[in-house]
Image (cartoon, rainbow over all chains, first blue to last red; front, side, top):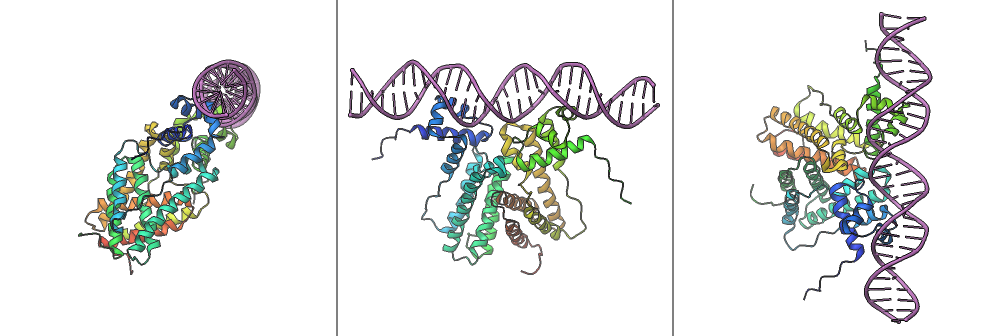
Length: 189
Length: 189
DNA sequence: TTTTGGTTACACAGACCTGTGTAATTAGGC
DNA sequence: GCCTAATTACACAGGTCTGTGTAACCAAAA
């Protein structure tokens, strides 16, 4: 039924390893040598698949840019589930904040390409919230969606420095207040 | 009346320059040579004042750690004014996110010293909100204070990638809802 | 078998980094 | 004038980084 485990292409192996190292230790902190050594390939092979480290960085971020899969749960539940999933990710010891925000923070105002991807990602998340809110018939879905992404990114930043998964719960409680204030039913208070 | 412009000590000049460069371009992106050259001093002089770059980084962050000055305005106003001040900072072209979050993102899980300072800073901000909320007699000041810092850090992260000062206004509106929900009078809706 | 394409080992250029060593120079306090 | 302390110029060690050049190798396809 399931297709046989697709033999990972070399490119994918490189990307997966770059992802792990870049995300956990920082993009500037990891050299291409380190990535190649981790896989056990030569640096030459890596450069045969990516013309430069910058290209690898861009591919790393693009690979992180996955759309949330559609759900058939009620929109309000979907929204709140976001924060539960956040809490689970915070609890994992390999959580290190938002890769897009981190990349922008690290690579600075220099790197236009990185910033562009980060903006697209953030906007996609905001739009996802907005669409769910529209399904709920919320009046100013745009504004509320923005407020919800603030809670998401705020809890991520806080957890990054404090390592406290409770930040996700705090964000969820705040989100409930905002939703209720917009007329959304989020269960008994 | 005003004291004569205190002749900036060498140490302060170094710190001020390190601050500008570290903050705007990133800590890893700036070498000590660059800092010395920017001031027009020799690298040797810099190392006479700071034993290592790590020490300079720590001093940079500690210098950024300034307590908000006490105000005699009503607590609710003080809280909301936080977001106005945030909006002004976002509008400045030299805003580049929270230096503490950026440092943690950049220097990774490696640097304990940096993380420690960042945690202390974030906690001090939370406590400041909590104290204002207690003055207002809010029931669960701890929880609400946490939610407010989420909005602050969320808007900072969003502005970092999107360069959109409106994030501060969105955070302020959300804060108003949360405050009103806690029984605080924040003016007519 | 021969060809082809990806891979490896390895050296290397050129740049940048942190940190040190040293001797000459400057400037202020006495 | 003299002493002291900071500063300077400058070289350099030792490390890291990105990216390239090259010749050998291996496996599978033709």
